[in-house]
Image (cartoon, rainbow, N blue to C red):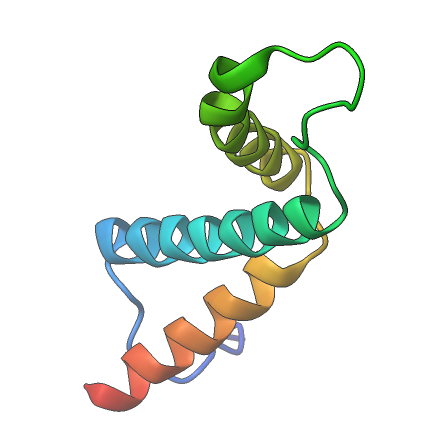
Length: 93
C-alpha cells in the first residue's frame, strides 16, 4: 500500500525562503530597537557619561542588542512576519 502524500504546493526556493526569513528578522530587530530606545536603553546617564561620543554610538549598541535578542529567539514577531511574507509571496505566483 502506498503512503499518503500531500498535494503538490508551490514551495519557495531555498534562497527565497532564506531571504524572507532574513527580512522578517530585520523587521523584528528594528521593532525591538525602537522599543529599547523608548525604554531608555542607550540614553546617557546624568552624572558620569561618555559625552558626545556615547550619544553618537548609543544607537549602534541598541541595534546590536536588538539583533542579539532576535537571534536568541526574540518575541516571536519575526516568525509571524515570515509567515505573512511567505503567504503573500505564494499568492503572487
